[in-house]
Amino acid sequence: MPKAKIAISLDAKVLDRVDGLVRRRVFDNRSQAIENAVIDKIGRLDRIRLATECAKLDPAREKELAEEGLSKETSGWPDY
Image (tube, rainbow, N blue to C red; front, side, top):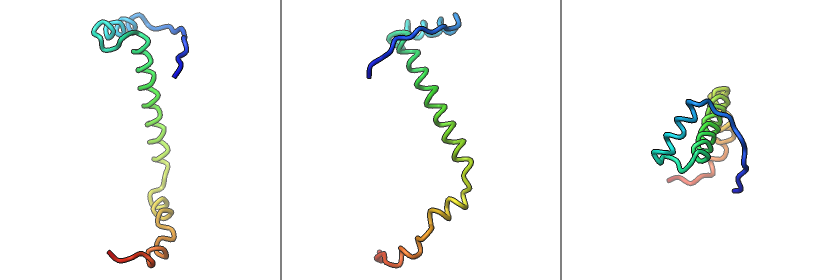
C-alpha cells in the first residue's frame, strides 16, 4: 500500500521514548513506531465501538430473532 508523508508534532518525552524503542531495535525507525501505534489505537477504538454496540442488544430479543421459524424448519431435518 502506498504511504503518504506527513509532519507531526510530539511531546519531547514521547519522542525520547520512541527513539529509545528505535535504538533498541524494537522498530526500524520512527515512522514504523508511530504507524504501529496509530494502527494499534485504531484497533482498540474499533473493539470498544463493537463492544458498545453489542451492549445495546437485548439478549432475549436476539435469541428470539435467531430462533424465529426454526421450529418449522427442524421438522424436515434427518435424525442423527
